[in-house]
Length: 167
Image 1 (cartoon, rainbow, N blue to C red):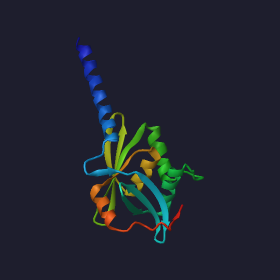
Image 2: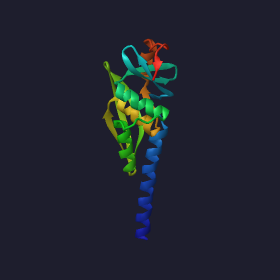
Image 3: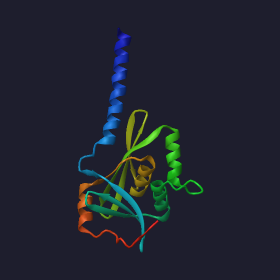
Image 4: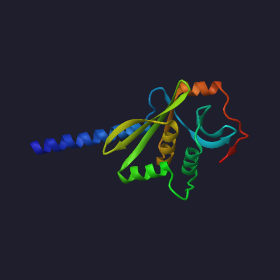
């Protein structure tokens, strides 16, 4: 009887861990909105990742290598050699780890990323550059969230012009 009780407790613990992971994937964190679309465009100032959520576009300027990685993940185009995000994706998959979701926030004039990862029924949150978080979320096909306050700020500013050339 005692072994049955231990097995039941173990099973409930495993189910609870899976439920936490599913909940983390499907629910929007408080004060955050799920991104509907991600694009990479080229502006006069360099590459820009455009995050669209509701009726706002959040422009995040990135370096050309990150832009190429995100663009490749969006389109399925492979570079001749793996880029850093390709390598990270491959390593994480090899160890049965996954990105659950990414959160983007703005503090002062700096974008911050929050990378939620899962492995072995546990989730952990890591601080990251917003561009790295976006790239890994695209590689894993997981949702990206932005703060509602960030969307409001984006609505007040002007998004990059449509005349930009897409990569």
